[in-house]
Length: 238
Image 1 (tube, one colour):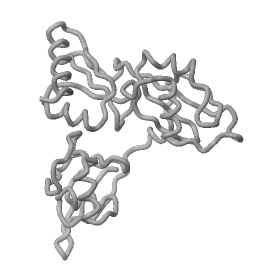
Image 2 (tube, rainbow, N blue to C red):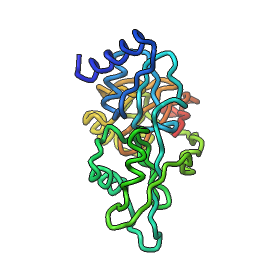
Image 3 (cartoon, helix red, strand yellow):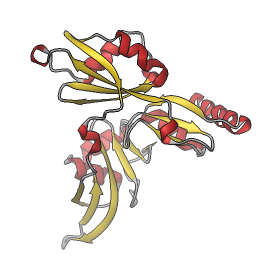
Image 4 (cartoon, rainbow, N blue to C red):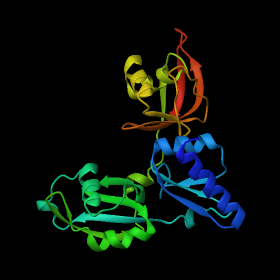
């Protein structure tokens, strides 16, 4: 059992033996994969639906509205003189404040502003102390506002794939060669339902969610039909 798995078991036992909700810090995809292997009942949430980094909650009363997650909007003081800020720029500025990565969730960028999801207890510290990202003076404010991109419904698409094999499906969705898709899988960058994929030949089933680090995620909805050349026409949600 890995260190992470032991930690999850301890939180689970503590929550159910003492009758309260126990929360993790933000989990990356590998930690979420370790959590899935334990098969422990829990809920996960990252501040919005589809977040990559999430907090896990153990206990009967775990509800999304109770997760200790805050959103901080980081905005340039002057848009005219601001740098074109990237995810790395925002994360670097937060690291320079001495904040551990585990306290920080996703950073969503839109219109050169960053919406940071973080644990509640660190949100006011960020709002009070973050004043510069790269060479740009910024303001940071705790907010309930979310960027419009997070409110967009999932896009439904039809794709054609040679089979339901993971490498074939990833290649078809992201327009990669089978070899390129296989490399992503073998390098540990592909997850099925939050569990790291262990091989290219794994068959993806309807309702499975596939996450490809650096590219996004999609859900296989259903097989619609076959083409004359026996390729599969599939419906997916991006």
